[in-house]
Amino acid sequence: MQSILSPQLQYLDERGNTHQIFFSKKAIDEFESIQKNAMTSDENGGIILGIIGGESLYVESVTSACVKDERTRYAFLRQDEKHLDVWNSINKNTKGRIGYLGEWHSHPEKNPTPSKIDQEEWKKIKNELGEPLLFIIIGAETMYLEGYF
Ligand SMILES: [Zn+2]
Image (cartoon, rainbow, N blue to C red; front, side, top):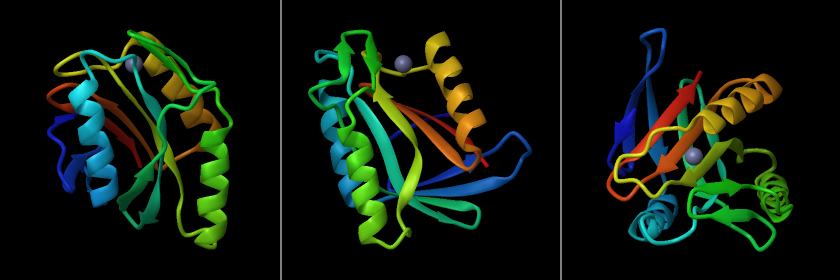
């Protein structure tokens, strides 16, 4: 689904159920600054951290590219273990309340769509971690969002 950045989104899943997806100010601010650089910078990316509340998801924060990640104009590969360190420490500090929700990365496109590599990667994560999961691609004007519930 294509959408503009917004603190609250309605997401219609494959089975026709509606889910609320909320974003903290911190997460929106981070995505907005990435959006501004989407056309000119190397792709950025990281993991999405937040809270699962019944049929809703609350995105609390996101990690972004670290030194050891592989970044080019048209690719992002998350490799730096710092993303997982952040995830572990947030999880610990919130006594498990805030955890992994999914992955995000940027594309140098106005209205991004997932590449074949993205789809294969998401499928792998889905098989490994189960649902709910959220995948986001930030473009220069809109974001692409795919949720699994
Ligand atoms: Zn991609």
